[in-house]
Image 1 (tube, rainbow, N blue to C red):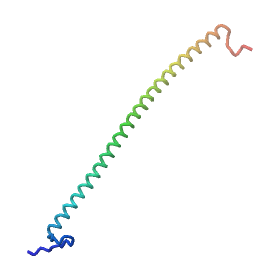
Image 2: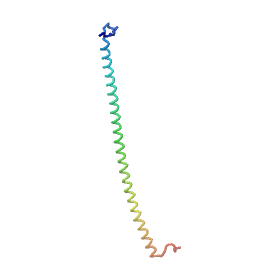
Image 3: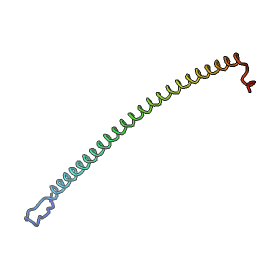
Image 4: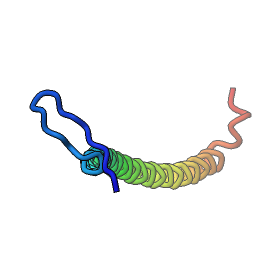
Length: 107
């Protein structure tokens, strides 16, 4: 087997082509690994940000739901109060009518 060699002109050493190829391949693997690690870190940061955003939105949603439930309770209370006032008004009208007659006859 003949192995081609590269000449390093700076120090006149010879490096076998097979060894050079192996070193280049190792360097490429290191670069790929570093790139993958950087991408994984970026993705991890994105996931953390998204998780934080989801937590904030969930908290906000829960607050809005609680507020909505409070508003529904307030509306129900107002409806009950309205019914009570309407009943009281009808009762007052009946009392006035019984005391002085129908209101439409008063000049």
